[in-house]
Image (cartoon, rainbow, N blue to C red; front, side, top):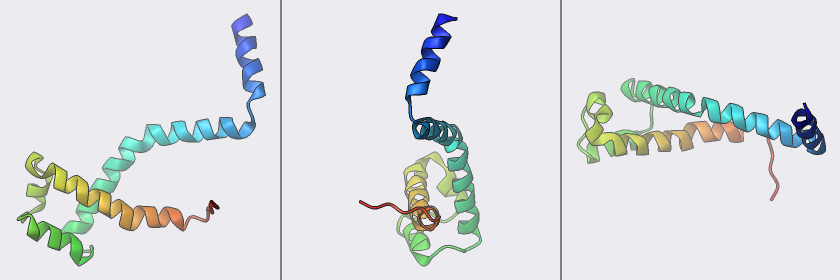
Length: 105
């Protein structure tokens, strides 16, 4: 019982924004792996339906990757990760920046 009071005391000293940040971080961390899988699936779907800019297909040609099955193999995992990272920079990060949050610094 005493330990609960001590914990509540220390929590009461924290600003509300710290608790909010910790909750947001926890939710982000828990969903990170699932989002990564979803983004990769979205990327592959757009790649197969030729909805991506030419630079992606040029990269595949340069590395002699002819099919999505090849790209999904362990042999080409580093290339796939590089393409997914580029996709995130091109599409996902842009959407986050347009989300209305401003940072000054």
